[in-house]
Image (cartoon, rainbow, N blue to C red; front, top):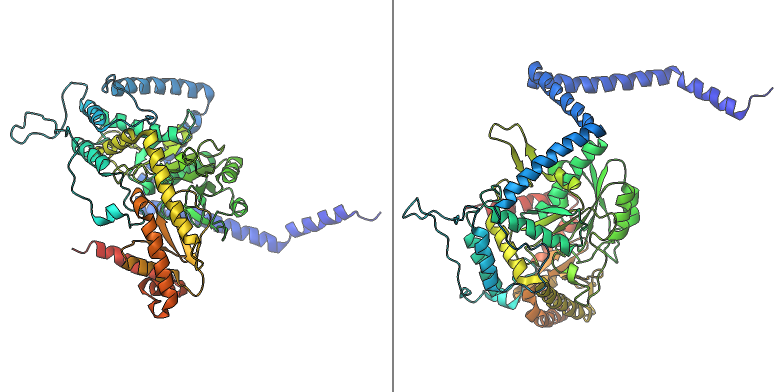
Length: 575
């Protein structure tokens, strides 16, 4: 009887598995693995000493044992009951300091006027003891006084020409002289406060919680939604990346984390990858739409992937990625989906109501698990404030830093900073309740209207074209050969316009702010004149920016550019 093909295949497999070469290879792999773990153990023993190494091993095993013990339903229920009781007692103690004050969990429809905001700020300053906490009076160290609040708006000097004319791309997110004066008063009142000590400054705790709640409502968060305030968009992004890294390590045993981002995602994700040792997988965007290629994202996902990223809107081109299919991918693989709305902030949520085109971007999309939003941009809060939001506190907890066995006491902080300026929180809260929904709706109409005016001007010039399909406040545009877009930027700069150059592809970028509203027509006029002049006289070409970016593009080793950038930062600290 002839052997069947299956039998032949089995015999060949057995022969291969029993071959001396394969046995030698398996022995080699075993020895290498053994050497790897032995070298790690040996290094610990040499560096730490046997006593410390044994103590650390014991502590690690103890931690793992109790971690698994807590997953037993009966034990988990008992522990959770005790924890909830303790937290409830802490909540009663903390919240009782705040008295029966009005709470702002959503933006007021109509913003409070300046005097109403001042009254609310004064109430928030008063502690549970009925005293007013503030600077110690130098004349009498035993007396406590409250810094006076102005009863009328501060008579601010005229702003510099760049503020009144609006010639700077982004950078200056000015909400008006009156609002700036009100924010300054709030900042002055709470200048000594520190949210690290919530029991001492309960008003600051309340304002921070309400700022987060108002932004969560603006982004249609579920009832489980939560968040924290940070020092800016970069820290919000860092905290999200840190949270997903810790979550994946805890729940999935991921030791070599990866995150997948579009090439147009903010550089803060690169910073987070470097800080937290997360491998960065960068996906190209479509050269026409400037949106990330979702199919390429899907192919890049593996067991080490901890999160996906999409922008609404991205910084370079003002384009929103397709968040819905990205979120679907994230949910299918049970990983984080972060939407960077730092630049979209208080504009994108109001686009539809303002009569502009919009795209899905917030927590209403199934699979979105976190969103970052800068309050210090189009929320007109003072610089240094942002909000990172999560779908559930079970994700947010991985952002926190807690040290339970520190000799100085139990230390816990929500973000990178320990002490933080409560004055910034007060300024942010004052701006938000002063503006209200209708205030932000109005500024959205003005700012996006100015962007549309600039875009129409760019599209009317045959030598220029807009990158992608911007929907919010940002526009970027490039040039057709032989015109060099960097030459256009240089000559606009000579006329007083501060426009940001982009690369890959070469372009100019404008982040339109409220200050651009009255100057949009003048910019379009100057842009037409500059392009016409460059076409008429080729000797005007190859300016400073064109030379710098042209050289940068031709260099195969980008580390040289990095060295120049490092030198620039050094110069910032040259006294």
